[in-house]
Image (cartoon, rainbow, N blue to C red; front, side, top):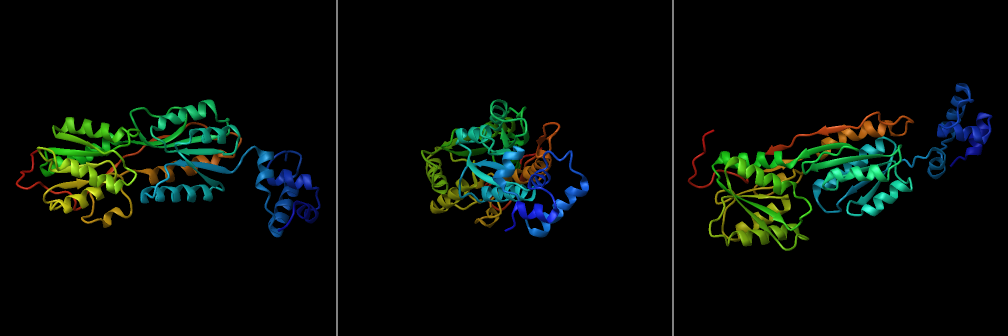
Length: 342
């Protein structure tokens, strides 16, 4: 690997001149011809500046922290890959951080170890406190995810409202003739947007609704099985289920089949969060496509593209995205039901 001194000798300049040209700092007294000669020598010799040294000179780390919930979820895996590809294309490294470790995120900002944070922790408006109290002017926070009614106001954001997604699902089920629907909520109290969306849509559409909880959702498919066991003990069984997560729905389908029921003939099942593998469930699962990948592809490149410039992004990006209903074979009209008019 070539050295800075070798580049300086090849270009006929001092090592300090090479450092200024390649780091983009203090080049006001260096002619463009000299700068071009330095860049050409660096390219020919395959020289790459030390990331640590460059960070000391420029104040930038060339690192983006992606905070997410570590899971084996295929949808999360797709999102991690999307953020990685965008950051790499923009010349940044990606650092994975558990979204529950708020202290680490604060420390990364205060110690200037990251140039940006992609925040997916619910509720996403809490990212405002990060940038207000801990971020330097050259650092950016980008919040991506569902809101609970409050939109981030101090950070870049791409967001959606689960009230829309739940309304799409329940409107679909009502249109099939269902009037009694259950929500499989798991045990996680932190993400209330889907439950609120379910309750609002149920009330607006005039549906009866039950909310089913469980004691533990470490095994989410197992949690779906447990919640259906409780649901089957209800005096009046709903004709359709809406799960907070697709894994709950897959567990529900297994439990219903074990109980001798057929999905969707005896009971319809819908999930939430489209992913590449969910179309291969048996039966293929009706669900809602949330726009994480769209958010990353539309917002992150533009912000990272100007992040290293002195001026930075001129104004905050705030982009509201729509959700999409994906109808498959796990939902159908209940036995003997008449499709409602209007």
